[in-house]
Image 1 (cartoon, helix red, strand yellow):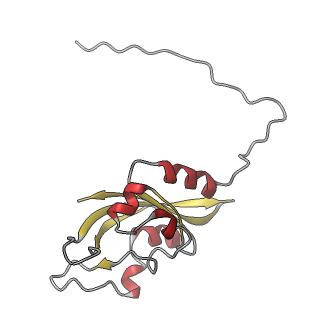
Image 2 (cartoon, rainbow, N blue to C red):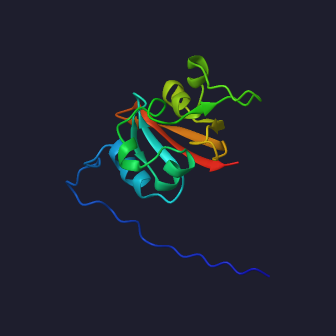
Image 3 (cartoon, rainbow, N blue to C red):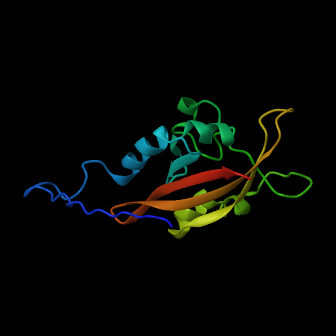
Length: 152
């Protein structure tokens, strides 16, 4: 029979006069977390520029070296998305607006979907990834999106 033990600990109470909000904003906080994450993930701002990407995320998405990607537009900076047809055509502008990282920004809600990413060279196969995105808020407004990826 399984044995489970529970314990209670005191919740730390902030000191009187301590600032209620963090000194950094939400995007900056997530940027640090994403940069250090082992999981494949990317953080983009509302203008779709890459704010942070994990090493495994950069590798999975064929984005290249992380320092070269930061500050670049996600879609114009190297991420090449293909449709799921046999022709492997590049996604068009209306289709790109529906990918999870962008949909989370425009809708302000969670978004999920599959993405087909073009291999970087002739011998490299295309990658199919499951993407789950959430909007990142700053002062109650959508300031970007955080996306986690899993290879399918």
